[in-house]
Image (tube, rainbow, N blue to C red; front, side, top):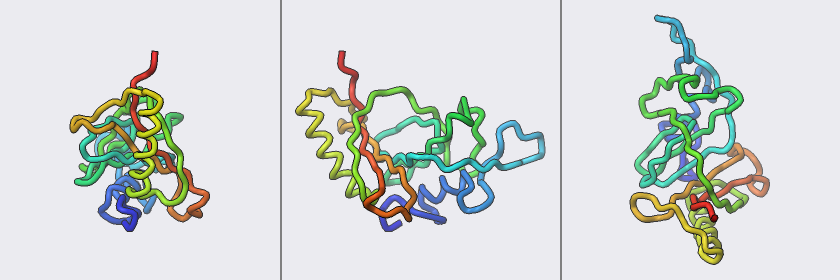
Length: 175
């Protein structure tokens, strides 16, 4: 999409994940516990945030996750509906994977306006500067960079000045 992370009924990560939960009609999943030969799908309510991570970071999620050449995108499934990964509907698109998100400590910086890679990276730099000033130890990804994600909380049609986004950096808990 125009923001760089996909935005709709297309082959982008957002489009594939949106089709998994049923945003564009019939959900592209198989309901957990479906009977033999019966392939019932299950609509899943859209939740927030949508999480995006750089490609070098292999993150685990309790969410449908889709990895592209440029990033990993995840939707967070409602914990009130699914208590375990096995309870979530199985994706019919082989690119979509349901994973468990591990516990971790993250520092956050909130920003408004549109949820784009450029905006997230600019906010990431500001957050990294603040964390260095406050002597936080960063969790590093395999390539040596800080482990981080961007989180978008609003639909694309929301007014930009009302949108809430975050950059999240994994840190080691202070003792």
